[in-house]
Image (tube, rainbow, N blue to C red; front, side):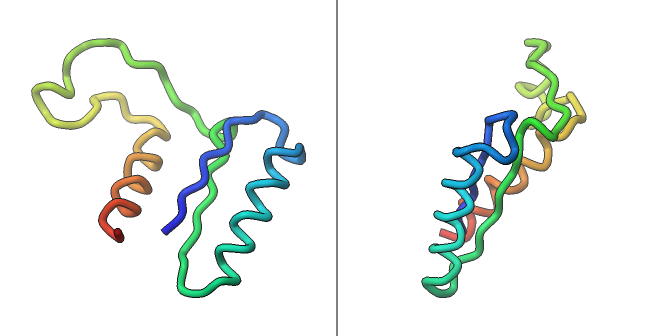
Length: 79
């Protein structure tokens, strides 16, 4: 699995075009699953240093970062 995180706010810019080409090439090569996440489209709050994650093992803030965590874990488990 290839996970592409796009941080640029310009959704039709050069970074998006480059990522799209890389992902298109990876898809054309075979059995590779690809996912692109546009960070600027998500609602992600900054860490509040509440240390809740030290007690629960996961962040206590419920925002779109959960989607990214899930994608990263899926990618790591597929290796």
